[in-house]
Length: 190
Image 1 (cartoon, one colour):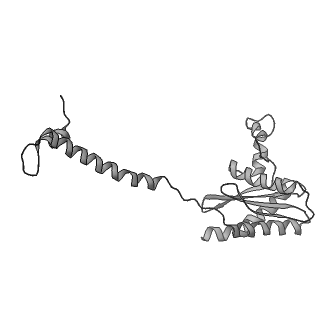
Image 2: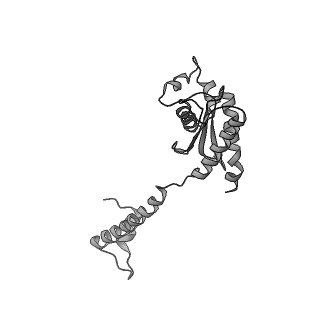
Image 3: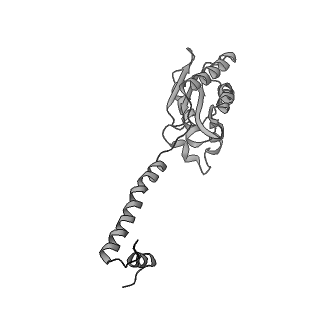
């Protein structure tokens, strides 16, 4: 039978310099393997968890208020939604005169920007009929119309904002940009 160098060393050496028996060598090898196996779960457990930055409710509300204020100033009756990095709503505001469709559309724009990691104006362009990504528009909940922007902090995607109700995606984008601008300096300082 062929033995590895490690097995041979264990078989031949002990603290007293006498050769070990097979039973003692196997017991020593088993003890060594057990020690390694017991240490391994601790190292693996640390790698199973991750921490990701995400918007707070306070930041989302501040962003939504700034976007809604910009739209109100421009005379647009809109809804604004801000989602965290998981796509869950943190803040939803609606001008009292905004259409009933605007809340769901704003949420869809924010979630779409987050999910596809692109602003929805760009998503609208790259998913037009006849383009390779046109099928994306058929996915549930996707809103490929301007007005959805990603929110980043220190290079990480932390959430998104969606605005709906202005006369066109470009006007929704202006309001959404005001919402992002309202918190961007604070996000970068944390």
